[in-house]
Length: 295
Image (cartoon, rainbow, N blue to C red; front, side):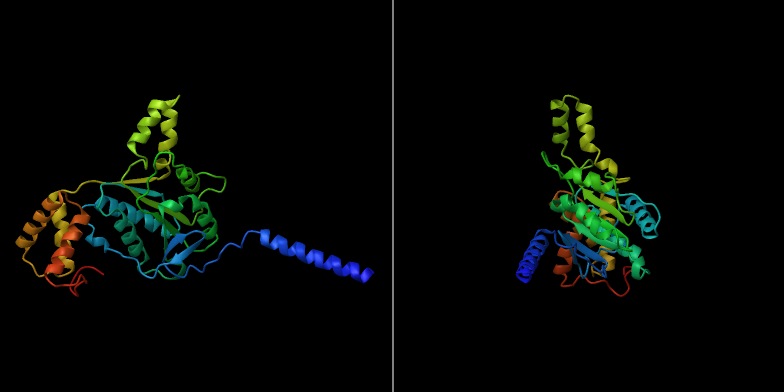
């Protein structure tokens, strides 16, 4: 009888242990972070074999932003204090291209753990940012988190998760993490949303402060504005030299001006689209020439 009771007790304990294992949360995924670029897809990371990068010297008309972001990123990679950065302003002026180009430049000449890892986080996954921070904060590497085209709409509360991850919370932002974001909006909120807060809130100033305090978490605000014709042509000419396109300078400028007029605006994106069209017309692939100044 005692043996039977002992057997039944053992079976009961085994069932209880199995039930507890099913109820327990899955173990946190672990990564070796062997690469230099990843995309965050909760709950884990997907390695990116190759990042589409425009050489830094081809980004014209944004000299101040380029120098400031490069220096800030270099300090962070060297283990020194650095600021989160918000790149805001006109469309097509190279905000996201600058982040990727600076990352590539900083990693030149570095090896092993000294190389900076770039992690892209999509706007819709911002609420899972605390999970990502817990995943990477124990790593000996340093990580640059990047969210492209970040903005929030009315009744969107995900910005509160980002606020806590950047500066708030009892843990704060891990020392091995820096956050860069690009946006067309300086305060990451639509203007009518802020105006609505002013008109409907009991204390308008407090309501607006709560909304715009997110952008205050970024120590660097780098503005990107509509480009002049001279800067636009400098972009076009730099691309043409880099890819060794066989076209006379005068013809290149005239056609680039006509292309911008047709598009109704000038920007780095418009310059690149013109170069793609021109290269296709000339029957030439967009590969750097041996004598170019690029990498």
